[in-house]
Image 1 (cartoon, rainbow, N blue to C red):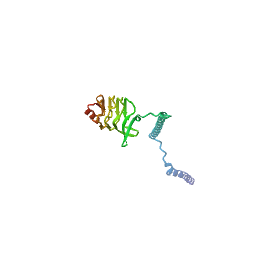
Image 2: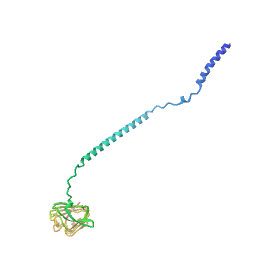
Image 3: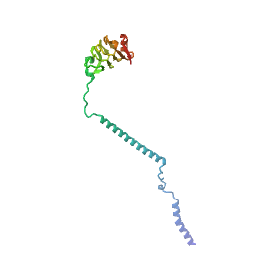
Image 4: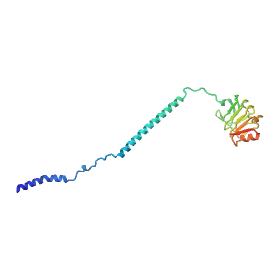
Length: 209
């Protein structure tokens, strides 16, 4: 009997620690959750971002290449030597200075078609002088916008004149500005301009533009 009791105590002594260990709570380290597996949507977003960045870089490279071609083209257009100076048409006009503005007094050339400019040598042209010495052979004359006055007998020397354009800026035209041959010319002028009124009052042919 004593031997049976000792045998039972021996089994209990061995089994009890094993039972207690198995029933004890797990250590905190065993409760740490594992890293979550990456979701498919996150992977797709990352791939999309990388794709967009690659596309932007390629686009920037293409734009840089285009700019490079443009710059090279501009450099080719730059002349390597200075061109020969071209005489300015205004150099043929004679003029006087009036209150820091210019008044055309004549023309040294012998032109059939001519333009009276709005500026000469940095001066604004405001008028064509009385009895201006303009080419006798001039057939077509264009007065530039900005000129304000045409003097008396200003074109009386232009006996071949048939067409003249007078801008809206002209607000004064002197007596007999076209001499005795006004019946052979046509004035081109804006609708409602002073030149239109002048043409009507003197019976000169005119067309509006």
